[in-house]
Image (cartoon, rainbow, N blue to C red; front, side):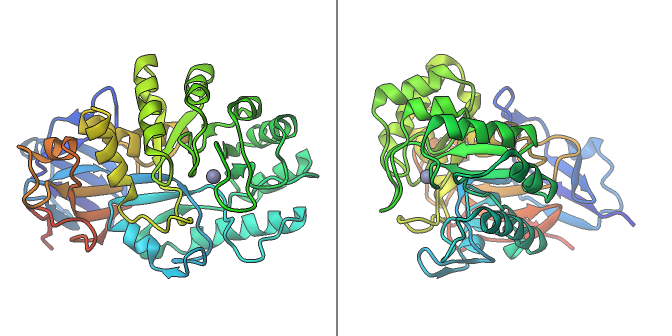
Length: 388
Ligand SMILES: [Zn+2]
C-alpha cells in the first residue's frame, strides 16, 4: 500500500521559486515521499491518508538546504568536539546538508588513493545513515596535485557527485584547478571553491582571478570564510560568470550584503544560495540558514518569501537536486513554521523582514515527520499537529 501524507490548514504556502514565491492553496498531498499535488482542500482527494498533519494555519516551505557544511562522520564533529549538531540543525528547519569537503577528519588522507577512499566512504556512510533523518550529501574530495582524469572517473563511478572546496588542498593555481574541475564536470561531479582569505592556519588566499580561471559550478562563500575579498573582486565575480553565488553564515556580513545588492542590480538574484560553512572555527550554527534569511531580508531589503528561495529553491536549481521546491515529483521535504511569539510584524513574513527568526514547528523529510516543535528556534505562535 502506498503511503499518503496530507497536510491541511496551511496558512501560507511558499514554493522556493523566485518567479512565484507564494502558491495558492491550504493543502498539500504527498505519496510515497514525493509531492503529488497541492491546492485547496475542498478540491483535493484527501481520503485514505496514512498520515494527516493539521498545520493549524502555519507556513509551509520546502525544507531548507545548507549548501556548505563540513561533516565528518555521523552526528559528530571533531572540529569543536560536538555531538548532535546535525539534529540541532534539523531543528533549525534544514532538511538537506551539502558537504564542501570532509576536511575536519583527523588524519585526513592527502595521498590520491587515500583521499579517493575517504570520499567514497563518506558518501556511503551518510547515504546509509541519516542523522535524525537529515539528508547529508557528502563524499566531497579535496583535489591534490597528481590527480589524473581516471581518478575523477573512478570517483564518479563509485557514486561521488561533489568536489570539496578547491584550494583547501595542494592545488593552489588556476590552471591545474581548471583541468581537474573540467575532468570532474565531464563525469558529472559538481565543484566549488574556497573564496577569500585563509579560514584557519594552514589554508590560503583564493582571489577572484583564481576563482574565474578555475570555473567551478559554485563560488563557495563569496563573502569569505571568514575573510572576504576586496569589494571590487566580489562585484567582478558577480558580473563575470554564471556560477552560483554562495553566501555563508560564517563569512563577512558586509560582503554578503554587497553580493546581494550586486546580484539585484544585475538581476541575477536567482544565483544566490546559502550555507553556514559549519562546523568551523565559528562553531556550529543550528539556526544559521534562518539567520541568513532574516539578515538578508531585513538589512538587504528583500521580501522574506524571496529570501527563503535563496535557502531552498535556488540551491535546488543550482545544484540540480530533487528537493527544495514545491514541484510534483520532488521529495516531500518541508519545514513548517510560524511567526515567533511576540515578534513584531503583522505576519510571519513581515516579522522576518524586521529581522526576527520564525519559530519552527515541524520538519518532514521524504514524507515522514522528523521533528516537531523546535527546541532551538524562538517558540512559534501556532504549532502544526500530527492527527493520526
Ligand atoms: Zn572555505
